[in-house]
Amino acid sequence: MIDAILIGILQGITEFLPVSSSGHILYAGKMSLIPGYQLPLWISVHMGTVISIVLYFRKRIKKMLVSLVNLNSPEYRKEHLLWKNLIIASIPAAILGILFDSYIEKIATLTVLGYCWIINGIILIAGELLSKNKRNTDSNDLLSAIVIGIFQAIAILPGISRSGATITAARNMGFSPERAFEFSFFLGILTITGGFILELAKSPGSFTIDCLIAGVSGFISGYIALMILSKAVQKAKMKWFGVYTIIAGFITLAQQ
Image 1 (cartoon, rainbow, N blue to C red):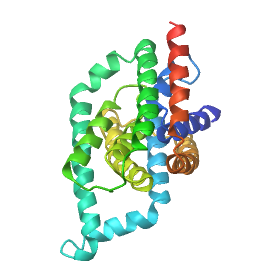
Image 2: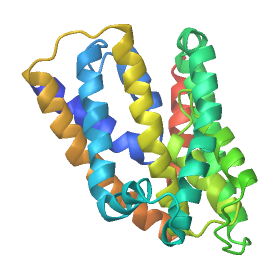
Image 3: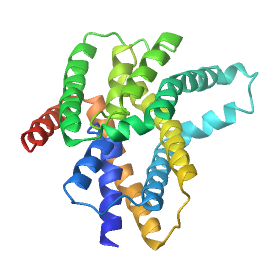
Image 4: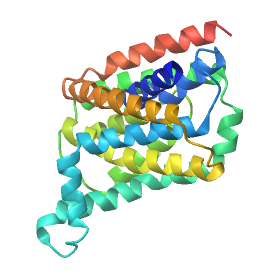
């Protein structure tokens, strides 16, 4: 049970904070800090984190869902455009995930992780500095969706944060902090859900009480992480997560 709680906390926090959940899980696994990979347990944690996003953005998501049954209403024009851009932004990661899933697993070493953590830190620090000179236009154009989607696709590498990459890309495409945060996690609902459905298709497995515990733990820690990251994005504090992953990267490389 303790292992299930710890896995839920680890995944819930690192899934949303821009420090790479896949990187932390890879490191913890290689260093024998967490038990071996148990598919049903990890699927449960992913479900918990998705539910935390849905609850956090519940009012906005409700309007998004209502817009689907009002396709011809001008009142929901912004929501319809957001749906389109979310779908477009999901495509690059979906393609790379399907084509290179097995390859990514082969190169998922601590050496690769160390370098990717350093790259993640550079992205966060440089991205935040550059975005300070950007005017907030909250652009909903096709190019923005494609660029954000490409940055999300890069995050299939262990050590590159999905939330960090997409928020950084959105801010530098002119999104306000609030819009960048929202778009990143709406996109995350599609991506994370697609990911655990893909994993479930590989091997359904059997679900136990530990799975429920891990899911609840992931939900609670994920919700807390969302609140922390929201403040960090609004106050331009993302760079400190970048400093953390650069240090983590050098420490990881030094251990090789």
